[in-house]
Length: 183
Image (cartoon, rainbow, N blue to C red; front, side, top):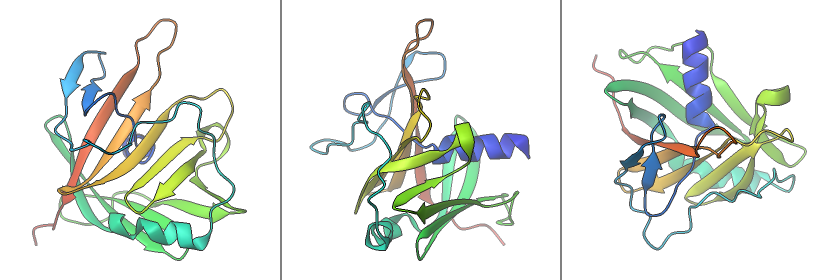
């Protein structure tokens, strides 16, 4: 359960992009992605802070992310279902047979802020468009960022860990593609 929650947190803390889809793997080495970011401004804004001006109309822009998706973490697939219901985005982790794998995560609109989690684990959106959403830490001092970017194949979850005094900046891109469980 802890591993699943951590994976969902990473995916839904979902994101970063250096250059034209060049990513850094978890060891700090470069890994090339194949996302089509040409001509699109999908770079993380390191100065972004959570917005408290979102409305239900902004959340409705996220309908493109609805569906059941397969992502790959190296050679290991994972499966998730995303649903927008009113002002809530529900993320369900799934097993390979399509059944639920743990409790769903919920991003909710409250007082103009769209986010999830509590305390130091809280992330909230800084920007929402018809094909993009960026989440940033809602707690001062935390620096991880993630975003979801609509793509022709589905969408990309891009996670970013900024440089620290003892560590290079890192990022990881998960390509999320439509998936249907075998029955």
